[in-house]
Length: 321
Image (cartoon, rainbow, N blue to C red; front, side):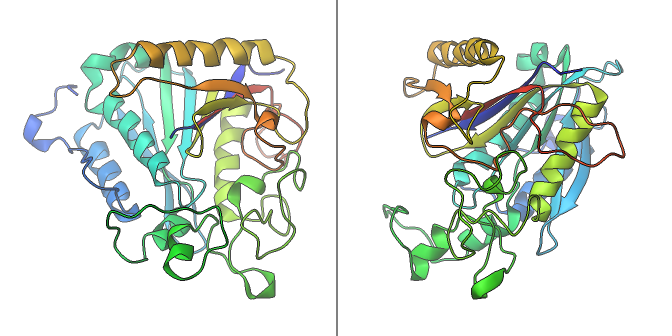
């Protein structure tokens, strides 16, 4: 049975009876480190015990925890549908995990203002997929008022700040796999490299990276339970919202649903009181460029205990950027 799950990749250019003094405050004056993200999530879990649950879904190559936060309204209803969001696949896209943390803050700390979003849905959010790569990208010289361009071959400090892959060593003395080329569906097709030294290196096999394995486990669990209805994957290179397919120029069977969901999101952003007007566009991912092995794929549900498949899920996928 196919699930009406929307796979969304987002590319982006409180109350609850808790005393104010004990609430973790999300700071927006700087980017959080991986450790600070972990501390913030732990603070929320401690302060909002009825509404927040943390789960370690895996570890990175350098042994950092990959932690999801599950957010509910605490009404005790079981088997609610779930919206799953992840961010930070690419190390240099710092804005993505910041966007994910902002969503978490709005759903938990600013619950009273947004409680309608939790009435019929639980939210599961993995705010930083590529913790090792992100930590490495922060290890360069301190930012000043510089403009950074990562479209050219990088060296020295620029190479560090523009780092994209994870940090697991591979062949030819190079480091890292592009986690968003390491998934099963369309693996190796389109803009995916077999050269371990390239920034789009697909890995030596499907799901060879521990980080992509962790995301796969979450997706399969939601698919097999029948609870997953929307998957948002946040990236930050362009101001567009994409949906399947990406590996080849084929429209998803339910692409009309994707278009409707995406347009509803674009309309909502246009009506919001943002500092800058929303200029988001939409389309199938292959319209940007064909890319295989990405997380934004639709696949059928797989029973617990059975191996994963690289066949498409029955979810609708969007990428917002």
